[in-house]
Image: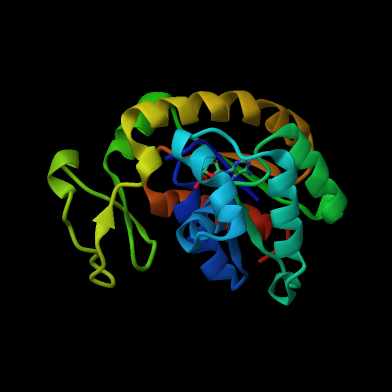
Length: 212
Ligand code: AMP
């Protein structure tokens, strides 16, 4: 499971590592955004929360992940991206899978770099890949280099919401990190480096734990 602040690159890394290991990438943010787009019952319930950058309730998130982990494609393993985000969610995850089977990859990046990164982050509205654009203002209508879709700013990547998300992350993640830090299978990786170096470190760690 991947933990790190918004903009740390954990989503990008999670997709890469899931691809390398041929296991599903389960992003709770993606699941929620898809629900909002589909205007499902869940989507209507969480839309306002996502827009403000606050956290969805532990109960809703725990039910969502518990359901997703029942799917057959998780039998060989899975990457969890964005869950658990609170101490209660971490304790709930321990009841869904044996705690000792979990590898925890903490990607750390300083706040200044995060705000800079998020201001230039765009997501393709078609294939959902994340891109960095520069300069930030000029990129309103750029096209996705992979599928030709539109690169758009996530509504919760506006500077004010970003600041709120960073504060929310810091207070919610502290108990999660406290729980995992002392366990076997935990690593903190410097996410301020080139994405390829970060991926290499993650894969080396997974291999050193005998999971590749
Ligand atoms: P992310 O794409 O991981 O940055 O998530 C986007 C938004 O979805 C967050 O700002 C929260 O509103 C919500 N969210 C995603 N995962 C969780 C979670 N585990 N617990 C609570 N809220 C979540």
